[in-house]
Length: 430
Image (cartoon, rainbow, N blue to C red; front, top):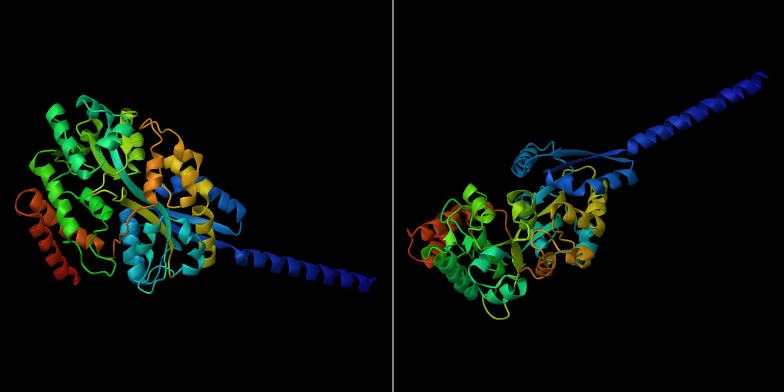
């Protein structure tokens, strides 16, 4: 009897140890992923995040939501300190190059390879390091077209349906001629384009359309190329002939011009639809239309880009496998990305989404299926790279383009020559 009791006790002890070891193993496998991003991301991806956590009970998520600038500042500080970096971080295309350059992001080339041809091809340059390794996953893009006010075109005696407007604005020369008609007939402006205190996004959009950015594919300074000079001379006509509203982007005057119909068009990215509908001027629903970009010459590309963001794993992350699992689950799933597009007008870089029926639904802000125009444009965006020193080059450009717009520098060629000289002095680029 005593022997049986002793055996029972041994059995119970072994079983208890097995349970404790098993529980310890479960706890040891629990992974906490830390993510830094801004509010737009959880707003768009909330249901996808919930699904991921439900299907992966061994992973928990700690989200830190900040302003975009705070994300970058905090990441730089963490990298400098060598501690406190998150596992995953959201980065705009104009900033990701900085973190690629300093080695702050993990190489995910092998993991991303099945998705390379399934994403907007213009996205890869910004997240590829000097060794050709990819350090981020594209999430959203900013293909550009012309947003136009139907009511302003009608006030000028011009047709306002998209097919007719697309013919009217076939080339940038046509666009300029229509600008003069609208000003003469309505005393309204063709577009908002400040002379100073502005980032000159429209100038960059037109540069991008011509594959004529700050640098060329070899990384050599290219801001004073002939295409850039032509573009700046072209915009100069709008300033000199009072065809552009002198209001800086995202200013009170800029909002008012768009809301009150003081401007006829805005060359801008797809995400403007969400801005119009959700907070800038929801009362203008149905007054807007969209047509493809004009071209500079016959056969030219009717596409450009403005903005876009990406998701990356930090080089310091100790949870890279779980981090990739999270990224792949959310951002390669067409259903989740369509849901984000529907929720917040967040245009996916994932090409698989462009054939979804949602793309051809009529949008209230325009009364047309304008998403199709942007989906088509996204697949032919010309090459461009922001580079790690983009912000500094952009700030220098603003000085000299403003001087040209204000008449302090006589020629576009001189303005861009001075831009190039100062960029060389301050960044060492040649």
